[in-house]
Length: 403
Image (cartoon, rainbow, N blue to C red; front, top):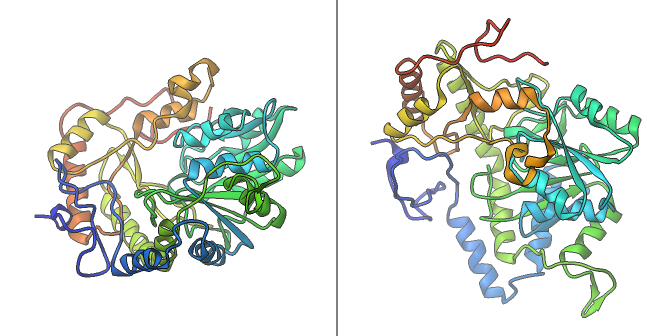
C-alpha cells in the first residue's frame, strides 16, 4: 500500500500529517503538513483567553511580511474577502473594470463583483496559463482601474510586462498569489510586485490555516485602510468612523499560520525535488506535457497541471480506478453560469481547459507515491480511446498557438 493510502490522526508522530480522509482514493490530490508545533500553538491561544484581535494575528502578519519581503501584511478570514477588501480600500467600485484571467478559481472574478466593479476576462499564455500581456493590452478601456495577475499553480505571472502596461495606462497592478507562497520572480518575492497581493491558506495550499487569507503591500496607508475594513471600521473601542465588516482572522488560525510559515522552505524544497523527478519521469511519455517552468522565476508547484493529447475523461477514470485522485484546475470562470452573459472570447483558455489535468502534488508524497502516480498516468494515456486531434497546422499535440 502506498504511504498516501494510510489514514492517520491529524497530529501523528512526526512533522507530517494527513487529513484522516477515508474514501475511494489511496493517493489524494492535496495533503498538508501539520504537527505538534501547530497543536501547541493552538493550546497557547486557548490558554491566553484571547481568541480574536490579539497578538498572534500581529505576529503572523509580521512573520509573513518578513518572509515575503514586504513592509505590511494584513490577515483576513479568507482569501475572497481579502481580495474584496483590496478593491474597496483602493476605491475600486461601480463603473470600474478589473482585468482578470478566466483560468483561475472563481473568487478571482467574483471578488470584483463583491466590490460592485466589473471583471473583464483576458486570455492566458498557453504554456504557463498566466495572463497574456498582449491580450491584456487589448482589453484595457477608459473604465479599467486595475489588472489582477493570478500566479497560476504557483508560477509568477509576467509581472514586468504587466507593470509596464499598468504604468502606461495609469492602472493598478494587483497580485492574486493564493497559490504562490514563497514564489520568486526575477529575484523578487511575489507579494510585493504590485500595489497589493492576496495569499490564501485553504488546505490545498502549500501552507494552511484551514481557512484564511492575507494581503501584503508596501503601502502603509493601504494597510491601515485594510485593517479598518476587516474590523467594522473601528478606530477605537466602539468608535466606528467608516463602514467595515467582520473579516477578521482568528487567533487560532494565526497561531497555526505562524508555525506554517516556518515550514514553508522545507515544503518548497520537497516540491522542487518532486517536480524535477516528475518532469524527468514524464519526459518520454507520449500524449502528456508536464508543466512549463520558466527559468527566470521560482515555481512553487502548489499545482502540477499537465496537458493531455488524450481523451481526458478516460484518463481521469483510469486514474480513479488506480486509486489516484485528479482534478481540473480550473474550469474557466467565464464559463460559469454567473458570467454566461459576458460572452468572453478566450480561445487559448478554451483550448487549454479541454486538455488540462492536475495530479496529486502535495509535499507528503514519497518517491514511491510519485512513481505510482506516473505509472498510472502512463498506463492511462497509452490505452483506451485515441488522443484528441490537433487543429489545423498544429503538429505538436498538446501545444497551443496564440490566435
